[in-house]
Image (cartoon, rainbow, N blue to C red; front, side):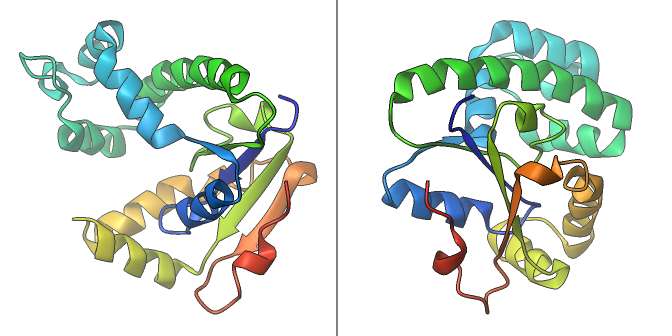
Length: 189
C-alpha cells in the first residue's frame, strides 16, 4: 500500500518504542498484536475455528479465549501455530486495508513481529527492522512479562528465520541496544 511503513523486530527488540516515537511525530500506528486480539475476541467465527484447530479448552463456555493455553499450544505444536496464524493473519490484513482508508493522508505504520509470516511485507513500501542483542532482548522480556528465560529464548528461536525472509530492498535496520542513540536512527516518513 502506498506509503505504508512496517516496523518489525523480535520479541524484546523495542519495535513498540519506535512506534510510540512515530505516533508522537504524528503517524497513525496499527498494532497488529492488539488488533489481532480484538478481532479474535469479537469474532465468533474465529473462536469456533480456534476450538477446531487448538482444542475446545482454548475458548471457555462464555466465549473467552484462554490466551495462556492458546500460547502454550501454539509454541508446542508447529501445525497448530501455522493453522492459527493463517486464520488470524487474513483477518488482520483485511483490517489493515480498512484502517489505511480511514487514516487518510497521515503517515501510516504497521507494527508486527511477524511481518513476513503474516504476509504484511507485501503490503508495505518500507520495513524498519528493530534489532537488539539477544541478551538485552531476554532481559527486557523477563522484566515486563511472566515468561522465564527459557520461555523467552523459545519465543526468540521461533522468530529467528522471520527477519531473514524479509525483502532486503525494503529493509532499514534500527539498532535498539540501549547504547546507540535511537531517535537519530528513526527515518523521516
